[in-house]
Image 1 (cartoon, chains in turn purple, brown):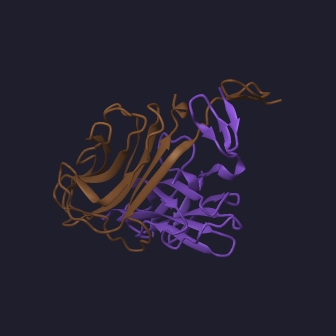
Image 2: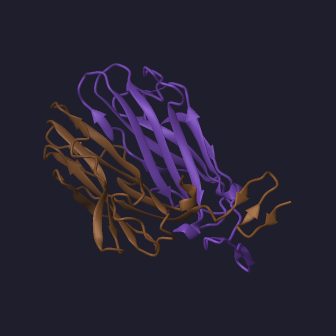
Length: 176
Length: 177
């Protein structure tokens, strides 16, 4: 039988609910439908997720993203995704794949579906420490190698729905 | 009002919470050093490994995300993949959770190429010896290549952070239908 104890609620399957799972553990995502021409590095892809203040300083953030890309002139082309965070004090790169993480040097027409993921623990790359007094805002940027890239492209036959997404989920520090 | 029942909590909207349904645990690891060609049958990416805590129940499932990047080093035909391996303390055996194949990502011409490779899946124990409460499961990320000309965790201009990643979450069995 489910029973209340000093530490929470114990269920018949022996699992224990020891805290509130609510807005502080929210998973959010944003989607893109616009074509963005990346003629320079660090092109903002209109993908932003603002998380509530973390529950504890031990929280970590699972960040995942995907973007569809097309080269505009069918020359050599290369792409990479960059995950950015703002903690109200400043902004930082959490991870940058690089300008030609996915790359093809030939002159044929190219398309890419590129993904990126990271567990932001407040210690990877430039990421600032996670602090309950600072909400975190995540954005997705695109790097390209040859100045010829459409990010979040709509130029794909048979496409329905988003052309890119950014997903962020705060995970309780006790899970690690 | 919400009421405590023998099976859990029932809510006014008719829903019920019958277990602490959540992510049970999470482990992750990163690796940044360059490695030479891994060959067809798979090479462990550095020391990229996570050891999960004791499995909560036989119904638990493991959600796995792996990523690395690679560059062909002689601008020839090339193919590559990253793949996921698991060791179970229950029977002291290791298994491939998923091996996409040495040319699951492939180009058959000689231009310069770079790939970002992923392996994402749920390990439900079906081909990995079953999932048993109390056991320890250890996951690793491996790489494969087709033409003997790939460099993994390659350097890329503008790169910052992590090149190879392995993230594993244990999901409560009640989350999986």
